[in-house]
Length: 237
Length: 359
Image (cartoon, rainbow over all chains, first blue to last red; front, side):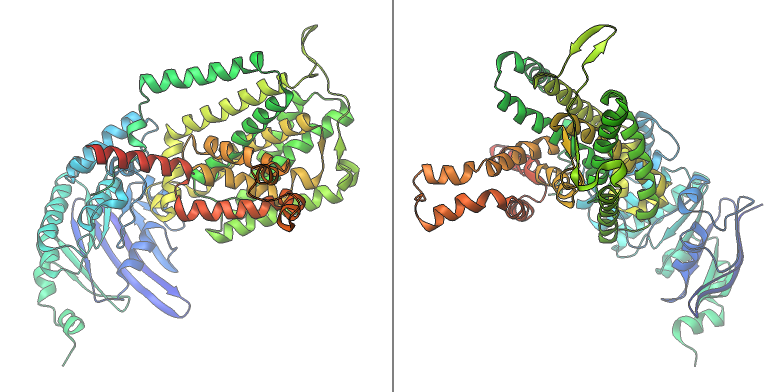
């Protein structure tokens, strides 16, 4: 059964269509890559799915439930969590406190939340930073903190918005390993990424957006050989 | 070097800290047995009251990051509810204050549901506007509030349990103890908030509202919760002020001035910390008293720095007492420039530096 169904989703800002008539499905446990040139509407689609914008048209169905009109906090409680392209650490709180905020979504006990948080901090390998202020972390560790924090909300579906953006190759490699580890935990993931090599390696399927529309969908091998996709990225002759 | 959390080391208070705290509390309770001067007791009461106001604001402003500059509205609501019930219906203030709290909570929910749609400076402006509306209402609702004439309390009822009179409020001492208990209570409440889910959610909202929202935090609900707690205790401070000073009018319990002062207590001491408002009160209460009693001008003259007959001496004597707003302004500029984390944050940083230097 599909864990997420996007049905004819459109989002207009004034007269501009940031997304128009996008449809696809995700099955449980898979990693879906979401790619496209700058301004293709990838982040807008994330925002429509997670409740930051109501879609202008169409439906988002998560776990059999219609999500339109739900606020981001309600979306998170139902088991769908997202990270931000521009990281948003809670700067004056420690790493473990940041992750605890996520964990408190599922428990009211600080003690329980701290245990859950430490678990996630270890998953992303930030245990040596647990008591450091989040605002002082370098970018690579901030990205990991983002992931730990959303993992602590115990999502069924995770939406990662450019978690490798701005990282060096070694750091990107760590994130790739992390994404594959998360898959082993049984969590479904949708990943926006610009690094083509990375996205080809981790994705089970890929959706390509261009100018707000779905240009192609398929397995990584089909996508790289799709003439439309090549034209969108490199320009047509 | 990545800074560690300066608050982290004090999460579990050490035995020394706990016993020191207990000693201070015991000393404060014993204080009126040794000091009889009504003036000193009066100053202590103002200090406790200031701590109560500053700490109440700290919950919404310091922890949750919503800079309400309209807290006079809750202070005035508490003061007026208590005073009107007492003077017209002879309802004792220890019952009247609950009405004040209830009224303030309702007011907070109305203000919150309107103003929390706004963020940052827009929220600040909205909070000022709403408080000014409340002041205007009190000024013009003369049947209930007597408007600009104000309400004077002539008969303070004695506090009795059964037939035994506990106190008839003839001295400052009962007020001292009430204010002390209120101040300790708000400190305890802040501690409880900081060490619970509320504290985490409030601080998450302060640090980044969108991130907080995406982590399952219902922004409207939690911001309103913080405001309600804050408003309830600010209202309590107003109720206490009314029966302590025995006279209220819109220009003493509802002005914008008061809203700004409430904010300054926390900002000067250090926002989002348990002891910030205490430190802020330690700075502001003596300062405002020194200005009011003209002690600063007199001190300058007595020390021989300024001659009493000189133009400057005469000018200072005449005008310095009225310049408290100016002095506060300068103080705020100095604090923001040199101690952006308040006096408490500044000293923490200094001690941390010293420790590193020695190590």
